[in-house]
Length: 421
Ligand SMILES: *Cc1c(COP(=O)(O)O)cnc(C)c1O
Image (cartoon, rainbow, N blue to C red; front, side, top):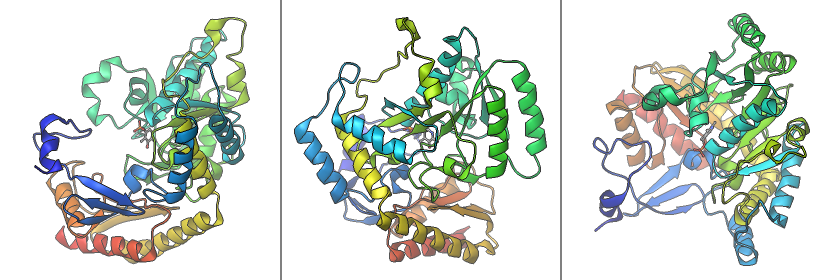
C-alpha cells in the first residue's frame, strides 16, 4: 500500500473536508526549494511550506547546528532552569527586533504566541486594578486558531460553532488614503470607553486574507492614537517576521513601534515548532511584585526547547548574512518585473508585492475553496509547482534560496494558468 492509501485509515488533516477531499499527496523528501512525492515527482515549494523554510528545506547549516545541540542538551524545563541556547537566542533576537522590545517569552506556535500576547495585555491592566476586556483588530485579519487568537481573527468564516465563546473585539478597516479619517473617529470613540486593552494587527501584510497590503502611514497613525490612549499595541509578525517584507520585520517600515510582538513560522527556519512573544520593559515590569499571582502564569511544556533555540539562532545567522540579504533583494526585484509583466493581463485584476511576497487577484469570482481553486491547484502541481490559491488570489513567498530559473518557472506556470480561466 502507498503512504497515500495508508493515510486514509487513521489520519485527520487540518483545514480539510475529508468527504470532499479524501486524498493527500505523500511527500517523502525535501531539499532546498524542491519537494519530492512518493512517486518521485518534484515540486517547487513556492510558498516555503507556509512561509517557514525560508533558508531552504533541510538546510545543511541549520541541520549541523541543531544536530550538535541535540547531542549536548535535548530538553529541560524552562520554568526551573535556563540554558545557553535560550540566552543566546534572546541576545541575538533583541539585536534585530525593532526598538523597544526588551523581553523574550517562549511559546510553541503562532496561535499560542498570540494567546500569550492577549493575556499579557489583559493582565497588564488587571495587575494595576483596571478591568479592560476588549481588543481592537483589523477586518479580515488572521491570528490563529486558539480561542483568544480566533476571537481577534476577522476571517471568521470557519468560527461559526465557536462564536458564542469569543472575547469582545471591535473591528476597524485596514487603512488607505480614503478611510483614515473614519478610522480615527472610530478609534477615538472606542478609546473613550476605557475598555480597550490592546490593538492587535498584522503589520503591512495580511497573510491569510490573501497577502493584502495596507498603508504604512495609515497604520502609523492608528498606532500613535493607540499609544496616546494607553491601548497596548500587539504586532503579529508570525508571517511577516524574519525578512519576508524585505526588512527583518514589517514593523521596521513603521515609525511607531509595538509594545508586544508575536513571532513564529520562519523563527526556527521550518525545522522545529516554536514561537516567541516579545515585549517592552514597561510590560514586563507590570508583572513584578511581591505577590506571586501578579506573575505571568502561562506556560507550555516545551518552552524554549534547546534544539528549537539552536535552529532559531542558526536561522538568524543566515538571515543577517549578506548572501541571504542579497537574495531577498534579488527576489524582490524579480517580483517587481513580473508584476509589471502580468498586470495588464485581462484575467488579472490587481497585483502587489513587498520583499519576497507576491500576490495577484484573478479577475473572476471564486470561493475560498471550490472547483476552480482545485483546478488551479492541480494545474500548478502537474507542472511541478506547489502554489496554494486563497480565494481568487494566487500568491507566492518562496524560500530566500530559490534560483532565478525556479522563479521563472513559477512565473511561467502562473501565466499559463490564466488561460484555463
Ligand atoms: C500562521 C499564523 C498564525 C498562527 O500560527 P500557528 O503556528 O499556525 O498557530 C498567527 N498569526 C499569523 C499572522 C499567521 O500567519
